[in-house]
Image (cartoon, rainbow, N blue to C red; front, top):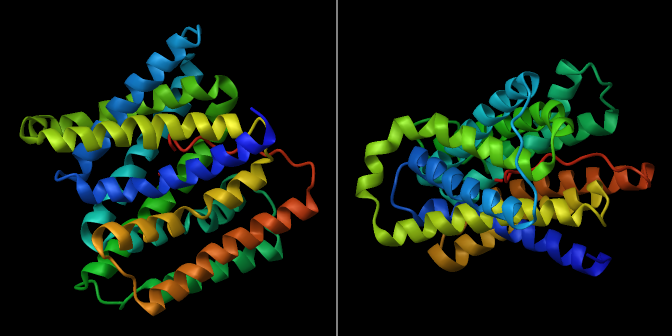
Length: 300
């Protein structure tokens, strides 16, 4: 893959991530079933891909199982809460709530890894928080949009914890295997809660689940990993930060879900803060190659 193909791959990854909420809206099923179905199709696709490339998936060590189990549980919470947010608050609200995850990563890295938080990172946290206040239609939990945003923020928190958990797991095995095992764990954790519901899934919803699992999960992960062979992780992160833009655009075109001017202002503040932080890091650390945790998608 050359640099131009890597740029195309990372933008396609952001688009596929943005489509996740669209399928959450389309699929007429519970958030738990959508999560389980997505994980099952993603696991099957990743297993076929690993086999096709001539590799053999290896059993994790006992130490790796602990890290994988934690990461898989957090991924299940992240996906389920995101789809609940979509069902309750709509695609734009859910996606903007989830977009708060970089602020949670900044806070949690300082708490869990005792890493020093720079003043500029605190500024990003503040801007994201202000953006969420603007996105919030009201502070009344009788308001569906407010409840949806709360679920979206929970999804962002779970994804931040998942990203940090992957710092322990990512060094123990290749990215494709990591994603495969984590998706399998997600399926194992969610299937018992929705197994009987699968008998009521309509044929068209099976198609949407297939696309969500294979393209928006397995393929997006493969594209992300491949693009990072040519792009800096910071550059990839800036492009991925545009995911809410694609999601809101698709929601407006397909479902006529138009966010309010206040929500758009809050979203612009959140996305702008994340992009600015990424640009600033790229300038101050030109040779940085910090690993991006697979969004096993990862994103979403």
